[in-house]
Length: 299
Image: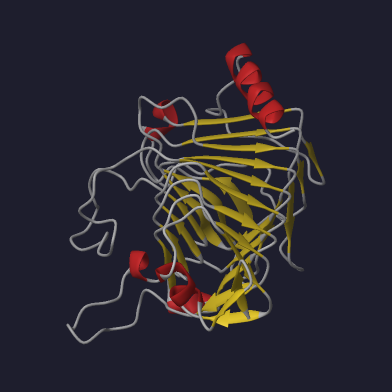
């Protein structure tokens, strides 16, 4: 059941079509639909939204669906909030990239929510300026201006396998569980794949987070690798389970990116002995001031 100020709707699409924005949409139960949230200042409260599209499916035009048409929910408006919402892309890992939540609106916020898939679970816009292969960005973001976005996740669980938090935006994750899923490979995945622009100081920031995993995944997951050369990831006051590889980071076979990307850690604990890569960067005083400012905003 879906309600807005007591009025009931049969689908989230129908509810969104009936408003201009600045509303609280309450979901009680389970929805099976692919949704574009294109109204600003909307709060989605409660419920589960599930869909199951994968990148490898061949469509009527003879082309693969591709990553950026697989989303379960696409946030295409500013100031959208999720409160106790679960978003699932139910496609399995073998069906390719499968986005649960794709964000290309400013100032998104999620609290007490779950975002779940396998590869490419959560995308924070913008896309890189250019694709590696023709048609790689096919979908609603392909031809739009690359606008830097910011999103906040507090007390949420984000779960996936390969590059399951990715994109060029700034994501601040506070008191979140970052859960790696088992795909039964020697390398079970990579948590982050940032494509942060060179002139942006921060990409993904994890503050007081718990990096967990499914069973039988010891020493098999990297924390991050650079989707583009200047990818940035900062992890502070967090805990790493045994699934995290001691070296922590991969250069994605791009040796030059060791000089340009910025992967940093401070005051973390680990169930494994950490012997991080030599090219990991040092946390600066400016980083600490920035994290403190973000933390105060969330309190």
